[in-house]
Image 1 (spheres, rainbow, N blue to C red):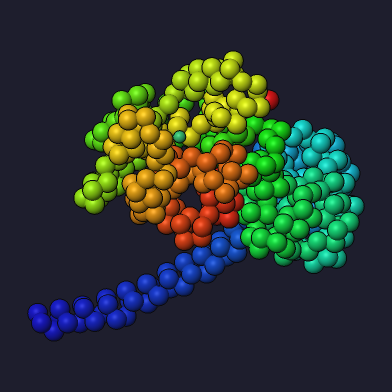
Image 2 (cartoon, protein in one colour; image 1 turned 180 degrees about the horizontal axis):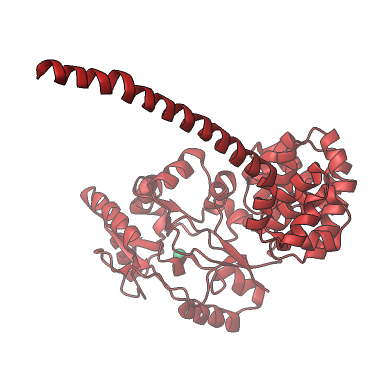
Length: 419
Ligand SMILES: [Zn+2]
């Protein structure tokens, strides 16, 4: 039995069975290779047709395209959708620009097909070769084309500005290519790209330059928002987190509310001052657009327009509407005034201490006497603006105004031009 079993085993496994198996595997391998070759060849020869099918071309359109030479087929295959290609074909003979049409269209989606074609034809025939000659790479040209018009490119070529010359200014929000010469003039003096662009685009940030255009601030909750004539708050803007700081208020104080963050910082300053024997008091803090308008109109009735404007901020242009500003006074000043004496917070011990220390709590003296040409507001030794500790430290260290901080650091509000 053992022998037989062994024989049977040997017989089946190592002879008959294994020979049959070996033959089967060879066949499968050969068939497999052949099938793979056939499928590969089919796919290879019809890949273009398959791609065209997926892009939405009909069978007869596929035939038409496949009859073109290889380069043209590749060109058509490099585009997303059939409908675009049909547009380019119907509008332009310049097959070599189909890529450019497609790319330009993808960054200027609101343009009509015809405008895309004429613009790209103009730019790529008349300006791109010269820009390339000036050392501009393809990527850099496309970077420009996100915003630049043909006349912008002509300006660059007339001035012979290289990409590395203009690139730092292009990083600044609100840059205008054709102002590049002015930017470079300012840069020569200020050595700061943000400053160069922003003061050129928004000259009124420095108030001795008149605001000929005004803008409405779109992000008024930002604690760094620059509010002044030119950059104004909407009449509907009311901060959502106004609170009443736990600090005494003057008898004639209209409103002592402030944004929560500013109120807490002011309480911190109040407490430290109190520990030194200085009793700070709030004279005025949040003021609504309507309140500011009422005050402005009152002044307007009493004085001429120029005088009124110099004494009180235009509605929407007052920092008090942000809930980040506070007019301070002190118990000592209030007591002196009650006796009929002349007393100004800025001259008091408390005022001097606040002026020196406010930055540690995130506040800045917003309208110093010496710089009223920049702020547009006369001496207000009582008016402090919350900007947060980081900005206040920087403003303190550089002896800046908020205007200068915004210009050098490139921090301007998100704005919408008023028509
Ligand atoms: Zn004030």
